[in-house]
Amino acid sequence: MDINGALASFAVIVAFLTLTPGLDTALILRTSLLAGRRPAWAVVLGIQAGTLLWGLLTAAGLSALLTASQVAYEVLRWAGVAYLIWMGARMLWHSRDSRADDVAPPGPADAGWGQAFRRGLLTNLLNPKVGAFYVAVLPQFMPEGVPHAVMGVLLAGVHVCEALVWSAVLIGFTGMMRGWLRRPVVKRALDRLTGLIVIGFGLRLAVQQS
Image 1 (spheres, rainbow, N blue to C red):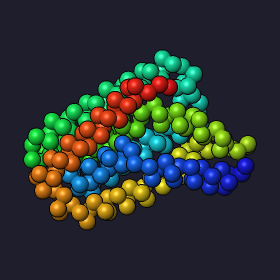
Image 2 (cartoon, one colour):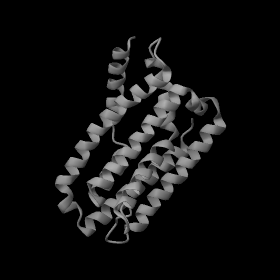
Image 3 (cartoon, rainbow, N blue to C red):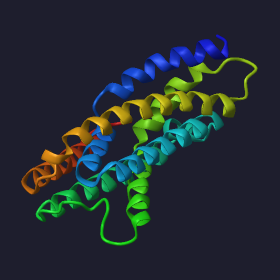
Image 4 (cartoon, helix red, strand yellow):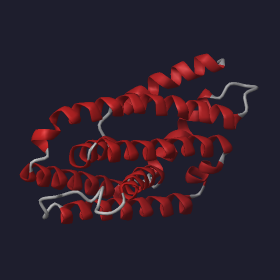
């Protein structure tokens, strides 16, 4: 398999993964609806930065520790569980307030952006299932004669490009609906729903086995 064939085949696989609703979709929609486009794109960029890091780590062989070491996998898994449950609980707590906006709290404009970026990045990096997916899939798309680190970044780049396009669609759609959806009662309901979804992902990660 040459480089072009590997990239095209990988693009088909991750297209289905990208379009499947999950935690990333919930976070992007919630942030776009309640905080606006800028924080939403910060979440998107954080998530995709994590994707690139997973691709690089996989190509370098470092994330293989997730499959070779049960201890490493469990540490990352429970860190992810704690983070998701904390984040979901925080959303539920803030939903008591009609403002329901903890993505962009009062303060400098770039503080809200940085917080949203970190949220996306940590959500991705603390999910061992993402690392396990890359460990299982990326080696199948590594052509001979191509440096693994380079190919890993290229493959992850394909994933990122598709995710950016889909994120643009999600943010554009919510932008058209934001006027109605930002009413206080709707905002509280959305924050509660997203908080429950995030906690649900955390609980599912807690009961799943490697």
